[in-house]
Image (tube, rainbow, N blue to C red):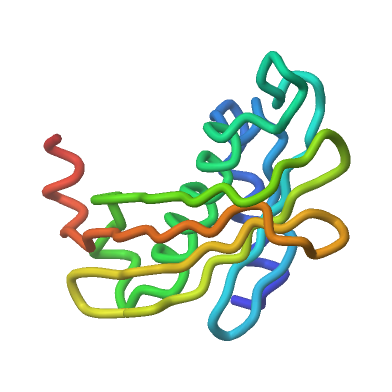
Amino acid sequence: MTHDEILALLNQRCAGTLMETLGIEYTSMTEDSLTARMPVTPRHLQPVGLLHGGATVALAETVGSAASQVFMADPQQFVAVGLEIAANHVRSARSGYVFGTARFLHLGRTTHVLEIRIVDEAEKLISFVKMTNAIVPREHKERS
């Protein structure tokens, strides 16, 4: 599959999910990264008018989980499930778009550790996120 075909498939799978609710869309990928964007609208803000940290973490978990699925050795037999996520929010946004780019710190057979950088349209760092995913057999996931 080409990168454009993978992005189209990922975006298609967002229909009817939290990703659609938040307006998250996958925008680009390289040989070792995946990027998604999310609009910052009044529905994404906390009461004081700043981007809600939970929305930011939802963007990070979305792109981190998808990156694990896209880049794992055997996505037909295995699925990525989140084990841990930690975010440091260093700046906020009030409007526009934020972009999350996931890159691997570790791409193992049974675990993936990713860093996800959330930046604004000026490429200023909003949040730095570390995420760990377990890679488990699909049949195990389907029984859960």
